[in-house]
Length: 169
Length: 169
Image 1 (spheres, each protein chain N blue to C red):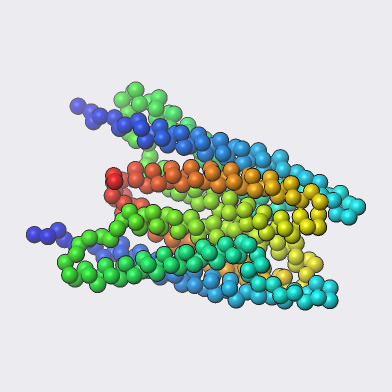
Image 2 (spheres, helix red, strand yellow; image 1 turned 90 degrees about the horizontal axis):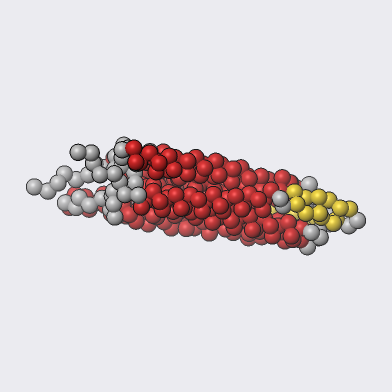
């Protein structure tokens, strides 16, 4: 007799967390990439975009990595759920999940931290002298906060995938 | 008959990595806290210290957390090695190690990222107009790099402690 298929509960928890991660990262991406502001320096008008801040560029890179990985994992999970009726009792690839979740959660954490750090330090420096900078950096905070929420979901996933790891490899 | 005591190899690997983490964090702390520079703005002289940059303050907090946790873990490991002759075959507290390593590695990663992000974005902003800022931010890079190395050691420890985790809790 074949062994009983593993419970669906951990798979569904992981799926919900991945969908949440995807939503947070997408919202963060939308705010980050549409963030433009016109600065008034004396009589000059200068357009500032997220590309002008290196930390925001790094944030973009981490968000793109995070979204790509999350979409891949959601596809794997859906594939697993569909195939389950066809007698496969495999539980995916726990070692790939473990390292993937771990690396992506570190990447998202550093992205959020770089965004917060640069925003916190540059905002007072520019807001005092330049009109329009305040709005720009507030959107930076909003994007970094959403990225942080995406990181929290991935960190929980990383704990779950650590517990699902085989004892010795 | 008592079960054979677990092998010393993983404990020794962890101990070496913890000592390395401690060394990197201590060096990072030393460079960060002694980082002062005198800025020349026109005719004025202004002293800048690491406290003036919020991201560097956050770095300090993460380094202090990291050092405190690492010292605690080294003490536990030494205690375990000494007690081993006295018939204790326990392997420490794998769940504490797992969550501790995970949380501290996230904290160190965000500290290094905030330091790199703020340095990268503020250096060109100040170095062009202010004399002496270049040296200050280069030391910021040095400190963040050492913090990053400390993070790498802790991330490896976090992988090891995930594998040492009991299958289900």
